[in-house]
Image (cartoon, rainbow over all chains, first blue to last red; front, side, top):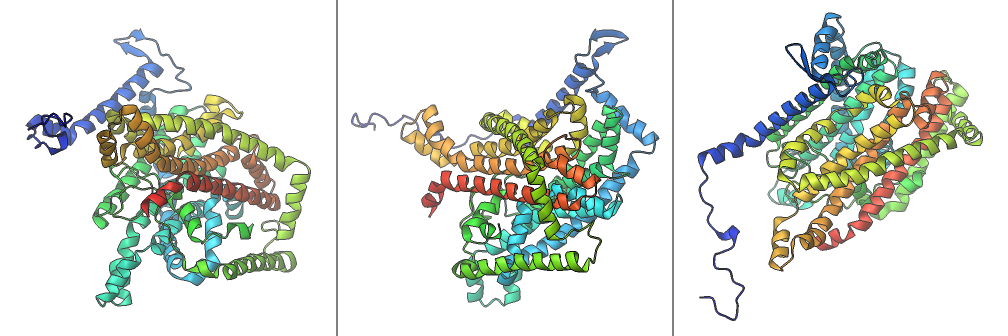
Length: 293
Length: 308
């Protein structure tokens, strides 16, 4: 059917119009788990390479590869692993982790409650917005870590100062995100609700709150990240216990394996918290996807 | 200061909106801010019409009055009644004196120079490396599947924790500070650039192909412009995180800069000096965030016109 006047038309239809052929079983299995397996292998490979670089390779007492890096400065993964049991034997592991994580939990829950309430008020009540808005905004734009030394000075070396620092670090991202969510609720949705005879309470429950939910979750995720920074910095400045305190102490003793082991604990904690929040999001706001790759 | 910051006009909210929202966690990887749950990944939310817009002058007056009242009450309670020991909470007049003294004898200027220098070195390295790495990782499928998760995991953790170790690795000078600023601000830039490359609207790419664009042209005319807002979100997040890491690094073991001054003020119980430093930090960080916000609106202004 191709006429010589339009020679550009290809013989077969373009790829997106062709029917998709059914995929073979191995292909489908790969689609489902392939990349995760590859990621796992990658992490194992990184650990093995780090081990060889920092610790060398010895088989049956025969040195095959000399360590390239000084293990004093970059301890190999096996030493980091041993550091866990070493620290646990000295009763330095679980108490400190508990101290940090319980402070974090208290500070973060307080920040979540206050942040969501203040954010809702800022978004919906114009008097509150006029009076508190600028203060909140300035506090949000400021790196609040700078005030941590003062708070440690005011409240001492105990848990109180840590909780306040964590609270201050975590609360503002939550406020700001809830606020933005609350003030950008789609007015057409509200009007539509009203047309169908919804009361104010119903509008709040069925339109406003679901609309704000994704914003709130974004705020909470940031709150977790900032709160964990708060945990570490407050313990660096002045503390007698905690993960950050231990990292500082072990580093000053040149025990980098121990310090890195505790850093690993922080990394796992942070990522577990993020994954938990993501699970909550999938349950509460399954319609919401923050972009997809 | 109060006047300049009056934020609640629509564009100001626009500027702050995605401040924290750019980076998300694996699983629902990072298109910047939640514009609206239905909108596809656009980093800038639709302009928000604040109700106070029309009554702006009145709101401004109220705001100034508010700040004046707060300062007056604080001065009265701490300078005159001395409810709390003024060593712990000095009145504003003392803070003001301390500020001028520290400007006069040059300590603040020196600290500012050191801090800005370290920040700029670390941050500009991070911007260049972050955009490049983001482009590479984002346009290469194994990169998205295998490297991005590791970047996410690093971004989620408090990188501050390695501060004491960086002293062992890099010594006592500025090097560990620059390293931490670099590392921490590079991560959000990588992640957002990556999200920008990999979420370019496929219909745009198809349209370019239909009009006969080759690979390079598609890159230059379609992918790069579509990425700009993402990159800017990443750059702004980088500023925020970079400032945090800069101050923490200086507070803990830095020899110069705002953080080091703060640490000295704390150990000498000079709360007036601490507040004066804080004031400077507030002004500096608000200005830098606003600067990026301005840049963002300038560079991606076409976006809103296209959309509306």
